Image (cartoon, rainbow, N blue to C red; front, side, top):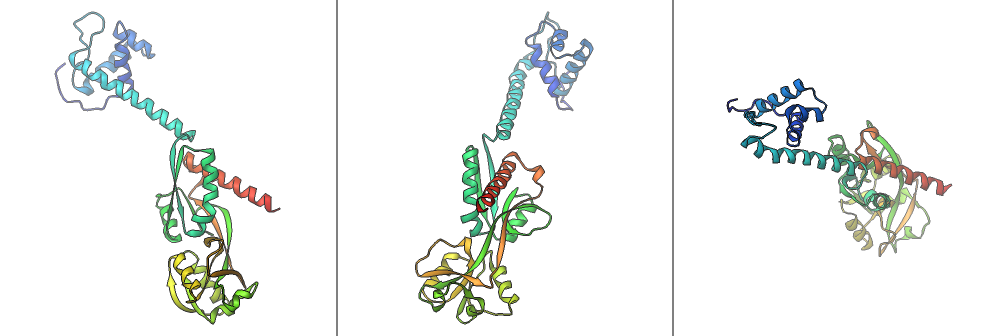
Amino acid sequence: MGHRSGTTTPTLRQLQLLLALTSSDGIASAGAQLGMSPSATSHALRALEKALGTELIDRNTAGVTLTYTGEHVLPHVRDVFASLQLVQATALAGAALKTGLLRLGSFGASSTIRVLPPLIERFKARYPGVDVVVTEKPDEQTSRDLFERRLELAAVTLPKTDVDSQTLAVDELVAVLPSGHPLAKLDTVPLKEMTADPFILTRAGSQALVTRLFSRNALRPRVTYELLQLMSILELVASGKGISILAKLALPDRYPGTVFRPLSPGASRRIGLVCLNQNRLSPAAHAFWQEARRYHAELKGAVR
């Protein structure tokens, strides 16, 4: 057989045959190890040599003797099957969740600071080998990352269409006031009273909810700041520069110089975990989805 460039890729079956030849006393017996007939064995060997463009077996010697090229190809063939074993081992480890990476999207502080941490802690306790990375973006961008397959799971505000979802928490809007403000003495702040002072409007995840709350009640706040950062809002409120309305779960338990009070009428939003199809999640994402379901069921049971 002359030397020429191969025109096809060797199959795994053909490469298995080459490995079997090194431990056999003949071509037919090598094929028999793989359950191949003598004619099928000869055909497979010829096809392999044709694919590689060179002879691998010295047919002028007794038994099975590899050619010079065959000897030098053999270590690489062994590497192929070693790599396949590694692929299988890695896949099994991932399926058993011994290793892996899970990327979670989060729409803002409420989910990043309050909702996701206890879930992640439970998940890590069960699957310590799986790394969890949380990426925080506004709700719209987080949802887009999900639909564009950059994320499998995301914590967003509900409802959302064309996704599978489960509720993780319900978040309430609260008045954020300087500790010395007259409204701070009230147990519940009437929403209409929030229109008299300079108002600091959040531009983060709860902005739309705050805006709708005022609009639904035919009220308009005196907006003097529109800020994205939570800490900036809290600092301005503490220094008496204005008042605000924020999502309760986004807030710390206490912040110096401020108080948090319920609103009347108020507004709430559902925070949920979403995916495109819960039946087609990767092992790590599926395990997190199930952990979230168990956790929420436990919380509901505790409330009862």
